[in-house]
Amino acid sequence: MNLRTIGLLGGMTYHSTVDYYMGINDAIAARLGGHASAPLLMSSLNFQDIRDLQLAGDWTGAGQLLAAHAQKLEAAGAEAVVICTNLMHKVAPDVEASIKVPLIHIVDAVADEAANRGLTRLGLMGAEWTMRDPFYERRLADDGIAWVPASEDDIQLTDQIVFDELTRGVILDTSRIKLLGVVNDLAQRGAQGVILGCTEIPLIVNQSHTDVPLIDSAQAHIRAVVKFMTS
Picture: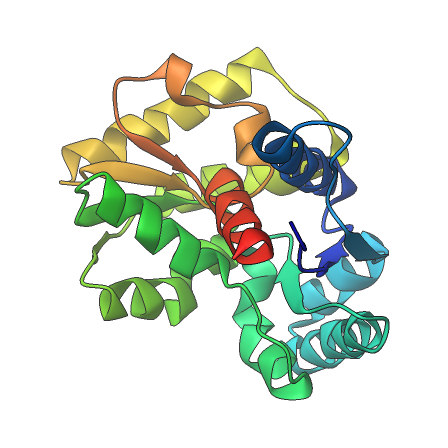
């Protein structure tokens, strides 16, 4: 089988980028057997540069930075580009406008997963910007999926755990319990399922921890990437 080459925009953070690299390769190896692996190109950014732009509110600069790296991947032969993080899809339009190849969007992958599981009302856990900004909500709405907002306290709690711990590779049982409380709160607000909308959250919370249906955005994204590669 001729596999399409994918360009990964990673390093945001490298902890979850490793999961993308391994997940895509594992899926290709399982599907094709033998010594098959995935043809991947990667541009792994310095997350400190991205974090500085986030804190400064310079989303234009962030979009330009990711777009420049996406163009390099395209020039190197990528047939599609993947942003290996949820939050930086806030600047996905800038990336899409800068390249001629497709951008495989994480929210589209989440929407497909929700449809396959019959979930039409979803809550979201992630960075504060991801939980507040309409880029996620609007794209889900285009696929007929209703949005269940989190409480202010849960937004602040989740963001703190993401940036003070998970993006630094710190995994604490006490924080897992707190995040599971956010899951339960969203379910009580009417969510049929909850999106793990930060690619680091699955490092600490997964479906084995709760009866509330969870959508691992990174794994849904990986499945979408593998589908594109093999189509």
